[in-house]
Image 1: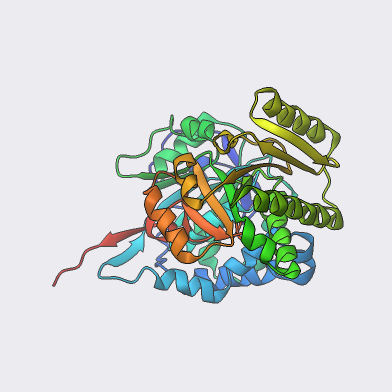
Image 2: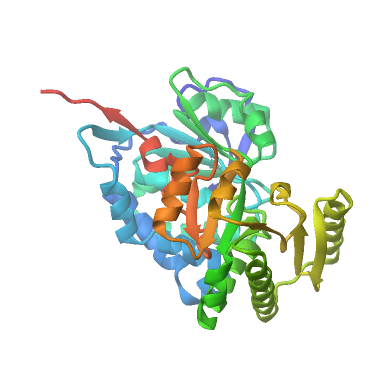
Amino acid sequence: MLDDVTTLDVPAVDVRFPAAGRVPVQELPLHVDSGLEVGDERVRAFLAAFGRRLLRPALARRHPELGSLGFFLRPSELARTVESLAGEHVRVPRGLVFHVPPANVDTVFVYSWALSALMGNRNVVRLSPRAGAVAQVILDTLHETLDGADPVIAATQRIVSYDRSDAVTSALSAACDLRVVWGGDRTVLEIRRHPLAPHARELTFPDRSSFAVVRAAAWLCAPRAARVTAAEGFVNDTYWFDQAACSSPRTVFWVGDEGDCEAARADFTDHVARVVTVRGWGVDAAMAVEKRVSTYGLAADGLAESVEFRGNALASVRLSAAAAAPRRWLGAGTFAHARLASLAELAPLVERRDQTMTHFGFGRDELEELARGLAGRGVDRMVPVGSALSFHRVWDGVDLPAEFTRLVTVIR
C-alpha cells in the first residue's frame, strides 16, 4: 500500500497502467523498495522502447505530437538528460512523485512522468477521465511496451484516473515526496488545499501565455521556401492543441518600420492560410461563433483596429496598440498582430505569465540581451518558430530532472 496512507475510507481509483482495474488508493503497490537509481538502465530501456513504438510511421502520421514525444525519448536524449546532472554531489531519487497533468494537452503527462521515472522515482499520475483519444493511444502503447520490460516498471509506476475527489487527492498528496501540478491557476489553488507531508515539495505550472516575434525585413527577404517552412512550423505551434497549449502563440509582434511590417504580416497570413487549407484544419460551428464574439469584442473595447477571417479556421486581429496584446484564449486559430519599432520595445510589455517567445529573424546575441533585460519578469523560453511545442527538460525555467532528484553531499 501507499506509504503513510492510513485512512480506511479513501475511494478507489481506476488503474490505467500497468493493469486495468479498480483498487483502493491504499492498495496501490508503490511502497516497494525498488532499488531504482537515477538514470536506471531498466527504466531507460523501457522508455526507449516506448519511444520507438511512438515513432512508428503509421502512428506518427496519425498523431504528429506522438512523433515529437518519441523523439524526446530516444536513447541519446535520455543519456544527455542523465549526463546533465553530473556534479560533485551524489544524485538520488526524490521518492514518490504525484503528477496532476492537464486534461487539454494529452502528451504532457508522459513528459512529466518519463523524466521522473528516469530519475529513479516511483510515480502516480492522475490522468483525467476527460483525457482524449491520444491519451488512450499512449496507454495502449505503454501496455505494448510493458511486455518486454523489467518487472520493476510494473511495480513502481502507476497511471490512474478518478473523478474529482478530495479524499483521493488528499491521500496521494500526503503520501508523496513531490507533487507536480500542471494546469490553470484554479487547478493549482484547488490542489494546494490538500497538504503535503512536512518534507515534501511541490512544482506548479499554472496558466501561461505565449507569443511570436518576427523581424519584418527578415521575413520579406527570406526565400519563399523558408517562409513556407516557417508558416508550417507556426501552424504546428498553434493548431495541434487548438491553440490552447501554454506555449502556443496568441499574438504576433512584427518588428520594423510600418511598411515592412504591413507587407510581412499580409504575406505571413497568406502562407499560414494556405497551410491550414492544405492540412484541412477545421473549426466547428460553436468554436467559429466563439471566435467571432471574442474578436469583435476586442474591437468593441477599442483594442482592435480590424478583424479579418479566412473561413472559420483563421482569424487575424490588428491591435490598436502593442500593449493591448491579449493573454486569454480567443479561440483556435485566432491571432492578434501588433507592430514594434525595435525588439527592445517588447521588454515593458512582457508579463510574468508569458512563457514562450517563438522568434524569426533575430540573432542569438539579440535574444540573449533581451533575456538579460527581462531579468526573470517573464518569458522562460525563446525558441524558433515551429518549436513552441518541443518539450525540453528545462520547462518554465525549471530544471525538471534536477527537481526530480535529491542531492547527497559526500565529504571524505
